[in-house]
Length: 338
Ligand code: AMP
Ligand code: MG
Image 1: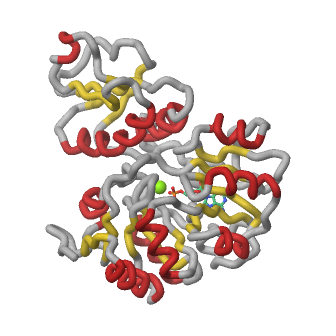
Image 2: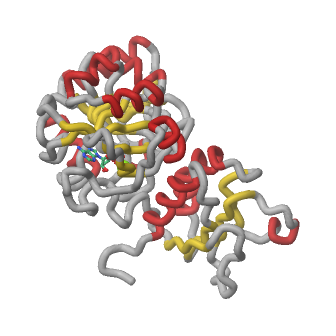
Image 3: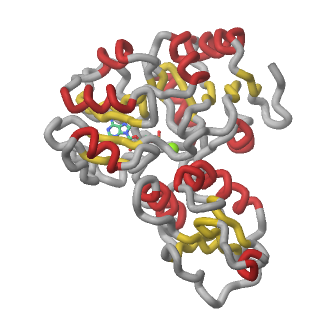
């Protein structure tokens, strides 16, 4: 057990003793930041309304944006929703892992968790420390990403400490997130028409080949506005201005000397390579590596004094869809600006 260098959150490793302590904190209505294979989450007992309400307060998250409910097993997931064959097929193929299923709710959790929708989002994560914690709790945990609403998602305990350290009691440190991109969210309320609500760490093609049918992008099946759930145009955003340019093309010519360039992969040309303020997401074009490093690099760039960052879009296949989705939202103008 070690204490935090700044803020007041204690950063704990996943020893059995610490897991027991954190499970007690959650049972008593407290909040704990947790490692997952996607990004760090801010967890509360999904059955306690005040605890879940405090997640929204700590993050500054609007109450219209529902929370994902995390479970340790299929047994824990069953009583939360009305299950169907498509949902079971996806759960069997991708759980535990970075897939969130949206299903008809049976009101097992307080309305604040689902933002009063008739649906519930459920995920069974694979990260061993998070699994151990949910298993020890024996109740489901509601957890959005552990960042101030709209800011870049955290992929290390340090990121959580830096932005929420003075607002939460504990951070469970499970090392850097293995995937670094949020879960893929599939609405399976209508089993014949699965819909992709958010591209994520499992590529759309894998969902489609598992189900042997298309999984088009869509608004939630309950007809709620697209701006409501985590799919706001501007999200995952640093303070520095971001400008995207197409994959394989050169960044915009006239640049402020204070600007930085973030390429998709390490350039082969030594002249380009020696340009100051040149960064890249992957050494050799690996999309998984790009996904893993994306949020950490955006945070680093945000700490430097760049006027703007010009970012090369990733290739659009596989994980590229989720990376491009995050980059587009991160680069979207603030409401009221151009
Ligand atoms: P976050 O926890 O910030 O990664 O985002 C959670 C996202 O899951 C929300 O912003 C929604 O897009 C989606 N979600 C959660 N619960 C529901 C629900 N009941 N119905 C539809 N989408 C949901
Ligand atoms: Mg989030």
